[in-house]
Image (cartoon, rainbow, N blue to C red):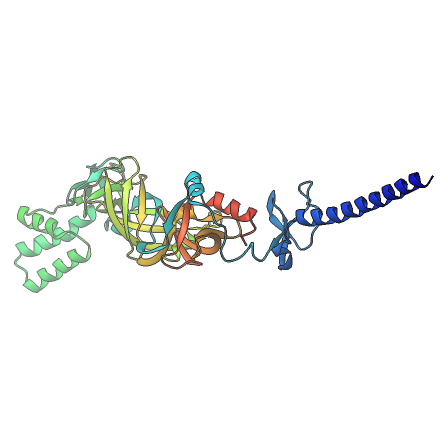
Length: 398
């Protein structure tokens, strides 16, 4: 009886020892399997976000409203000034191309479309200052081209016969020079052309028919008479519009019109023929804003010495602005979010960080940076959206 009891006791003690050793070994093994404490847990949490939707930020942990997952904290170290680091291989695979913010002398020019119109300052009215009749018209249709001195119409003025006959009678009677001079002044006051008076004296009979000639070269913009019509003093028979210069009237946005000044140079290309190029300058900005388009009308005086431009034609105008030195980056480097503009800048540590900038006017493929960058700053010109997405996933974007 004694032997079995001794064996049982030994077995019980051995089992207890094995259990105790296993417990201690398990504690030691479990402690060795635990990862080292996360250093970031001792740092300040900036915010929580969903890595799948990194834009929205939350001020406390919880479940993501977008995905079936918990929000992930972003620590101060993750959003440090080092930005997001991308290896050279990944940059090459993403097609990341860099550019440098540079200063360049550019002109704030813009394009506009102008409609050709007559230069109203060159218009000339042809009138008669005597009552009479139009016996013959040399120009019978509006918009006919005329030369300076070209005959327009022949007018018969019977009221001019009596004054001329009086002059001829005084000369035949040998009247005093003072009387003859007084009659000549009366003829001049009646607007009788001096050439017509000389013809009367040479022929010895009064002349009542005279020819109206064009005082300038251009086109007949207005034809107010026909053959056989009676004319009265002050009646406009013809209106001649000059074509040596024309107006190109363009609609200019008010934001650009405020920077225009009289005399600004402009280059124009005919819409129908790109080989026809003309030069001009700003003559006037009409003081009226269109309520529907928020534009002002600008009149550009364009040289038309060759006579190729006629009213109604369209000109593509390039208005040159003042030359100024501006900070430029490629337009494609700017990320527009609707509320702000960002560029991905490479910092001194070699990482990429989002930099908010204020942009100005565009100059071809470049855009002006008003603030946010300085000359020489490297920015991502191609692939910036991928870099920006990577920065947002890592919480490195503001």
